[in-house]
Figure 1 (cartoon, rainbow, N blue to C red):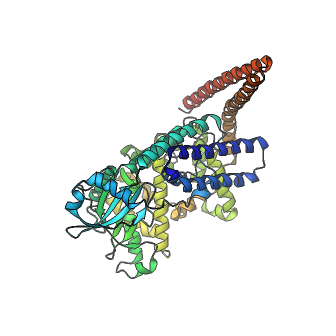
Figure 2: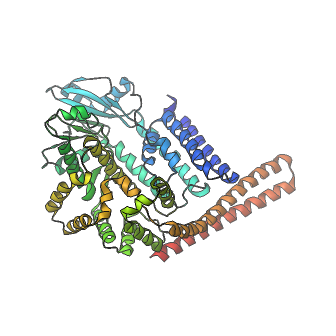
Figure 3: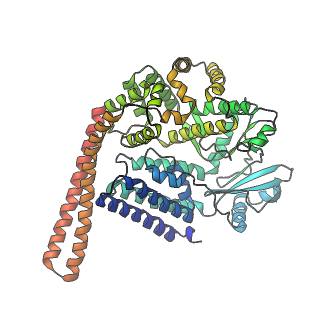
Length: 539
């Protein structure tokens, strides 16, 4: 197939990238009005989406991860890729059988009675088949797609080149994006999914973590049949959380199911350790006994002990209005890039915490939300991928709970569960946080994550200050890009001079190239010095 051919993939991805880069340059040169900005990025997102579906593989997974990066990319672009589904046609069974024969050898004849040749599920990296062992046990067999390792390595090489080019030469929508960190995070996430032995370890970790919760069910794994390319698990069935009518027939009420979900995921979000990063309704089922069935542990995130301590300290600092300390915690957590001005971030945090709920009635909430999104994109903030996954996990579970128990308030459902968790932890700081939240009317808005995003503030004056700093950054970036464009012009002139054998054109072109290259490196050095100065200044 064409999408598996390395040269074809390289051509399609690079041509897409450079067409997009040229479109961005052309848009900037024409100085189109702001109203055209959304349409422009919507078209780019449409082109990106079309190429992802055509080439499949790693690119679908990258699109899914980028769709959660509203902190970095324009909203119109995000809207085009936010509903990407990781479903691709299954491979030919003969190719899958070759993989199984290579991984298992004689183990198939020794252990298996039957394997259904029709895939139960098929995604960009792996496929799932249903099998029956000779002892009668039904199992799920997860197999990596043929040649996926080679495809992924090709895609990573292409992506690394595109990111290098974008970092140096393209006027990006947010000037403070740390492309290297973003690429490193993407690579870590996807390489983890490629190694099924890591997913095996993750399943064992979760089985141990929830061994004392009798209402949680996690599939058993078969170590003797599992390899880095094949994972054999217990086959578990249940009711999808979106099938409300079927949930109504269970002996356990929907409110109790909602509380069980909260009880399962609070440790994911607040304790150090690995958390399920993709808890969509297809990966969480409800058994006939009302147990929470967790599936698919390929995409996970990790909160270290330091992260957990810093998160707790951040919340405590915000509640006690110690904004200087809160900024330090944000920096240690990796939310703030080195060039962030701590004084401006402190003022922004102060405004977020000081608003009154009554202000919501006095303003256009949607207009404020759009303004808030623009403001966040103007700041040197880049959310680490692990926290993007954590936020997505929280929002997804919140949405599921609201769907299965719409008549219940989230705070009332979560209150007894959270208090029980605090008592088990013996954590005085979290107890302090909870008591403070209960005493503040402002946090009645926190029934919804979206409610928090709609909180009004007086950010305009801080936005102006940050834009001035961003303007200085843009000057250095633009100088680099102008020098690059001038070097391209010089190369074109050099070609014309060689073709016409005109010495004046030849010498002039060489002079333009030398000047532009020197200017590019001088601008790069100045930018690095300025970034270093801003980093030292904030400390």
